[in-house]
Length: 410
Image 1 (cartoon, helix red, strand yellow):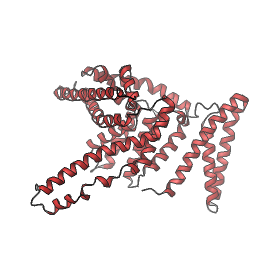
Image 2 (cartoon, rainbow, N blue to C red):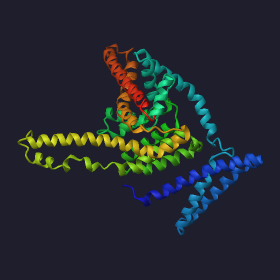
Image 3 (tube, rainbow, N blue to C red):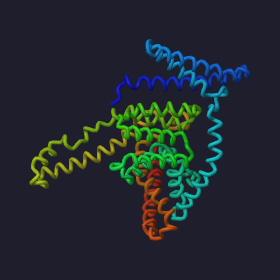
Image 4 (cartoon, helix red, strand yellow):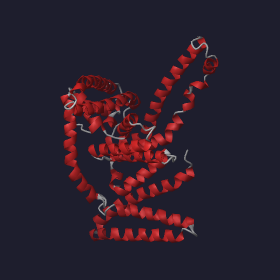
């Protein structure tokens, strides 16, 4: 577990960068509102001050470590101001980002349309098609207004916003089919480019980029045999992304994505005590393993029942803990941006999370087999079976969400 002393520098740098970006937006807005000619002085003054502080920190490193640290942190704050233009709307990287969006946006949109056509050609229709396209490719146009409202009022609308849940499932799916236990470096060399190719395909939204950067860091730290504390990776990801795209600080998806992960990092271990669900803490477990000659006597049967109950209850409580931990920090943002918080969000997420674990892998199997059918017609029967299973699971999810949305108080 990471100690507080190791997290304090990262936390201080990230907080100061956030404060600098916020101050830059405020200063830029006030300059434009009062003295427009001053907006051109923001960049040279802030950049010169930041460089001077960094030079001072380098000179003081050997003899005045604390003063050097203060200078570095002050430089981080000033760089946050520098990263935002005086208008407070676009970062200095905005031009580069605009060019990339113009060049890649139309191409990726066409690729997504072609992949969505595979879903249609294989028989997915109406809301089943719309939910699958939204959960895998970010294309929400096929979801009916009635179903969108049901997902929103039930507290499950986040399933349509591609984020860590979707990218994490894709990461696990790829990790299972790649032989990571034998060739971890070669598998990572395949897995990470596929992960980022998917991120580019769906549009490089802030929440997807956050998840992609964090998964990349976790993979690299694992390859280097380094400890990968969740809070440290989260802080570094926030610092890195806001250094490149500081205007994301005002993006609702970016804020809710980071707040969800922060809530899980802070509150999950407080809510979920894993040792409560360990079967070997039960006395019947010790009795059964001490008498292997009679594995099905009354004690062993009791042990199996207790173990199964503990496993199921542990899985359910783990999902509840994750959802509750995330909502503790996300709910205020949801109330601010959307004006409502569903009282049944725990129930909705208990339904959405396990079904999403089925829908997303099945959907990608459909896409893969759909691309192979013109070359290997023999896979068509298996593809039809997968599409049927996917359609059943998605319709079950939609009906369940409609039921939750009809409950009193929603």
